[in-house]
Length: 468
Image 1 (cartoon, one colour):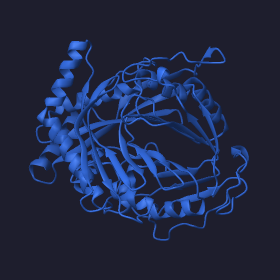
Image 2 (cartoon, one colour):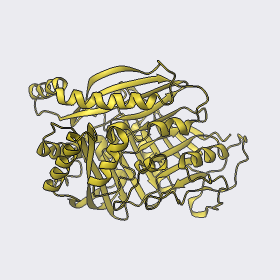
Image 3 (cartoon, one colour):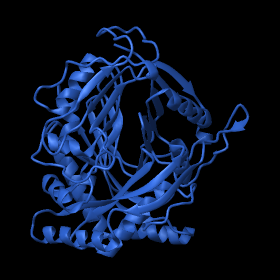
Image 4 (tube, rainbow, N blue to C red):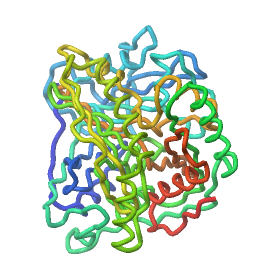
């Protein structure tokens, strides 16, 4: 088994400088837990030097796919713990992987990839993997045109062990001036122009009303609707990521550079974490903007906590996650550890709950993830019918949005976030999706405004964002 070369640093500035250097060398996956004081915080880890990569994409709603794995440089023999040389992206030798799953099931194909290339495996799982196991399809325009799966085995791993006194807390970056060799870390500037939506406010509100009609007719209880923003992008994607961090640190941020695509993710939400036999998910449902004064902020927080509508929405998703857990957890072990907690971030207050369970033995990692995928907070309830309605009402293919970014360890533990508040930058364009839960008593105008509140995660550091 390949063990990546591991390095540690105590400085976030140094850590981001390493990230910038590695982006010049090739693909990177950063899992950035930016809030050490947060109850869900963990370590920030940068993965680089990938020697094997798996991609999978479904086309036009059928199960024909372009899934493939490649090995970069000299292949390691299974079970060989000798470290490989760092990958050289300019001189890759691409060797097709013969471990493709003939049934076209991407989860099984990913399992075979991990079996052939044991070690850490990190990257993302796209929302449209929903089609693999259910009678669903994705026929809307696909602007980002990304694989539904990108997972790779890294040969280098950098860990940030950040001292408590230089850790960002919710709404505050206590030490943004941590230096490298005496100089503050600076990224290159970025520019976003001509930001626009794929739908007008009137169209989105009509979609809300149509979702409510389905709810009244008994098709579903809740639907998570979204829409996509697009803009022209110039400059450093890493500059945008650090601007988002300075705007508001979160516990499940991520930065990916995969070929010509960069992903800047400021997610506050855990999708799924496994530690041994324990499985955990922290669904978020219920959002309010932060106030301008302490008194106003506390009043908004209290209103969110007391909102019957938000509690009902949150409880629906908690029940959905419990149902997903029941497919892979021991009978009687699934429980709600926290219900209706309020967590405060730089731009929003959020209502968060926690579901836990004890896994049945001998269930493959990919089957555990597939049973719960995608996160219920991004679909609605019941999940399958909600996803059918989403496909009908939305005007774009979600792709990476609503999926998950994370890592699977050699032992089979894993941690994945929910891909929300995420900018995808590709070929000079930026894509950013926002949404919210629709119920029978939702106000269409308020739902539109809530999506704009969530877009604030893009940050004021670039001074460009004016919702259309």
